[in-house]
Image (cartoon, rainbow over all chains, first blue to last red; front, top):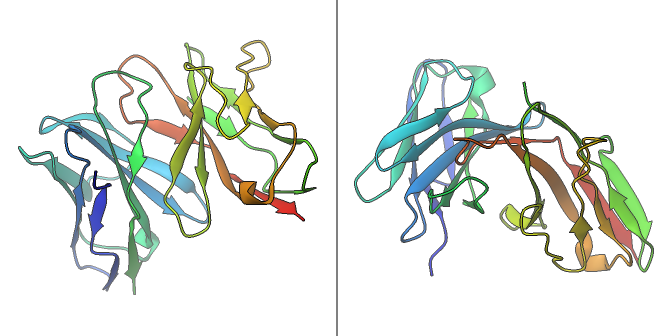
Length: 114
Length: 111
């Protein structure tokens, strides 16, 4: 069974640009969550999608958005990039049916904003 | 607000020694607690969760609601246990996929 796949693996952007990250969940998983990981703040929850609907949202500005497609693949978009957006972005998938489910994480996309 | 505190950034033990990684949480409701682990050059993965009360790779963790703690323990550490360990809190209700993570503890087991 293929794991959670995130693309691209690395990205370099400049301030003011926008970026789109992609996440393909494990087959059969309908929930995709996104996390930002930085040395200073650690792992912080961005949002979670289930059946193309955002079910949970963290405390990030509106520049951070996401969506989920009918095949459960998810994309995350960051507009007007700032230097502080440099981070490892992780997505995780799960069945999404109950709380407390095991999350399966991808390898992440390392975003550098110059 | 939910908060998870892992007081030790670094923890070093020798092989065969007991190990305890501390985790304290702050949450007014009924918590769901997890330990995730990241081995070198591997993905973050679930080690155990309190609801299943299982022992994985010799690790156990007991939820103490009175002390709001969920410490991870292993009686005899192995070198392959060296990794970054994260304690995480789910708020229950409709917290699907939404976890609050601690800052993590790097465990090093020396031969």
